[in-house]
Length: 356
Image (cartoon, rainbow, N blue to C red; front, side):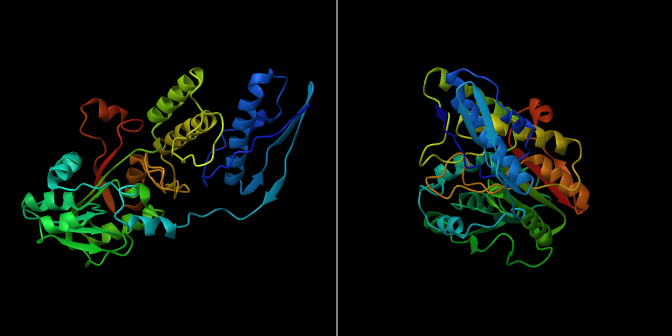
């Protein structure tokens, strides 16, 4: 009897192969494990092929006690990150399935409190000009204005509730790579869960530094999508679900594409990928590589499955050091002393850069 292959559609353009696709020479295994091994090898082979600018397709055929594996190699050009226009269109729509919506100021203040307090603790001067980039619902911009600063909100779309709550706040619909502000016109630029949705994060950072004054602060708050701690957590949880017969060996139709994976083979793949990337960046990767991914464009969005970039604090520190246009002021969150030690693997992205 021939065991048909299970081919997984990997969607990452920059994934470290980790040498694990050498397990394609599968030896004799018991019948319950064939499905898992085929799915796991398919993930690693296809993602390794993208890294090597070629397409390795896993087509195993296990006949009786003998096994054979075949590969088809098709060379192609390197995959470049491309901005998804469909996703940008969805971001402009005030739909709760696409973006978080806070219908009143109390909800907005509760949601943005940590971000606003973190940014205000590093405002370089009184009555500062603050640019809230990717303001979303707009309540964080209102909070900056209520703190006594001149705040501007920029996003592809801003909620009507925030506009009506404080008509003195200036909201601008613009792209983060082409900000409609003069050079050296802002004292602080804040981004809350924004950078991971940018297909070209380095271009956004350069544009932000352009509008910042010398000694101005750039505050970046978001997830750490290369977190090894979270990758271990999701892998362990999926293993537990498999024991309880509630896990996933392979992808199903309509399943979202989470940055840490949705099936056990994907969870293990991303665990190795994130660990390898983290080690390279901590050792001083040159030049810094902003690892991008193909976002999931099927709402509802949750767990950053619509992210275009594996946001992490190490990239920001390396970029500032290598470009010599900014210096790092802080790179750990407000969760206590433990975050000063575990910031590369746990705790999200809480980075403050100062323009030189």
